[in-house]
Image (cartoon, rainbow, N blue to C red; front, side, top):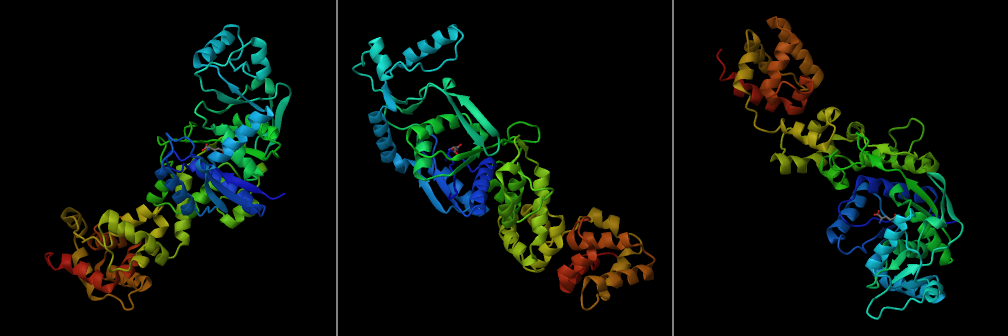
Length: 468
Ligand code: GLU
């Protein structure tokens, strides 16, 4: 069997992280089994679908590196095919016209409720029933088309994630497959496309479980082979409610904007609702080679923003300063108005990446190396007490060469001993003068990155004006 999976988003907003996880699993499953991954845009809801939302899906998937082997296909371009299948089903008796008005349907449901039955369409326009009841086709009413659902038996499938699921046909009524204006309905389009695209595995959110028995019945009526289904549990926020904007970013591209790496988000989403032993950090190649539907969790996953940050930090640390500089420079320029010259941004990024959870944080931290340093006078007065100014002048006159962290640290120790000071006294003063902050990475490394000229310049700017 050739494995063919599809991701079938409706373009009504952004690419949600839940959708992205579905896409990731569909992609990985196809890769794992040497099959194809197909992208199908379900854009038949004209009121809610927008070109911007289509673009957001394409952008989000490209950013994550989830390229389809086939597609994107657009359901709106399949309209003639849907009509063809509807006509065929009407001709074969698998579907029929239903002329019930909204008022009649309401009355039907009301009556069913009143006698304690489940409200459902009673099949009254099935040709033989309509004839028996003597129903007359109303002259001015455009009919809908309904699928003739089997009356007997059950629909069962072995769900790849949830296990065996069975629904009695008595629970299902005759589904509308074409509206009065002739447009096909959602479940019907999905079925025709899954059939025509020879989809072998439907992997999707478990909010679609209720659609599955109906879709299986239509597929069977069409003589199509029924794909395997796997329904993934929802993603919840930390409070156990369905993940929403209230909890944090839900749009994939928002994560890009917030400074997350696609590697980190993919790794995070892969692990969210699926596991391979205790493995938390893995490459996409590893994920593909390990991915199995049986290892997906049956219950909802909880989105953990801190864990995502931890993973993002992991991937940031793996990157070279040069790569990080490339990613950080535009953010520095756009968001902070900083155009990095000296010190070199790659060295700055290398120094700061340990502590940065996102590219945004990295850009913000890098900015302190570039913005004109105007140390706060209060902080300066606080730090330049007693022998400190003298020790600083001494240090400035003896900057080591080559100007490397170990030699700088040694020079600082010598100055400390000569002036009877403790390390924090000198180090804090240097931090405030060189970067305008008391919180910086290790000061010897900071100075190495700044280089002797900038260190000299920034020290002179303060010390030359400081009372002897
Ligand atoms: N278009 C549906 C959605 O965005 C998915 C349909 C499916 O996977 O069968 O929820």
